[in-house]
Image (cartoon, rainbow, N blue to C red):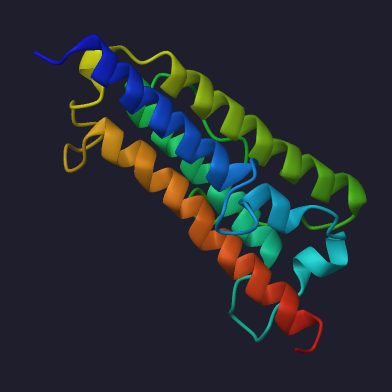
Length: 165
């Protein structure tokens, strides 16, 4: 049996990891939201080479995985992801400002929904295995925070490449 204080500290740490990876200041540099802040649709659609992902695709991909982890944490009872293509959702046929803002808003919404689910987890939930049973819930939450940082780094690299240096 775990002491309540230890479990509360685990929850606080996991929430802090989610926040720092997504939209809070952290020692490691830009979060995912920070990396995409201020980008235009044209910048988000730029590809470094054919068949390579662009920033817009990374935004939709990270939104999807926030949704997927949330579903695993809740037993899968939260409807379908609003964009077709699951892991790598299909880009809009028109890549304008409205569509870009909508997809950034989707990413932020999926983050808030995931964070709300994590904040509501009881102490016994952290050690349970979610989804197909390979990872504990705590490991999935930690993993999705790291997933944001991984893709934030890719966004930063794509921005640098796009700027020519």
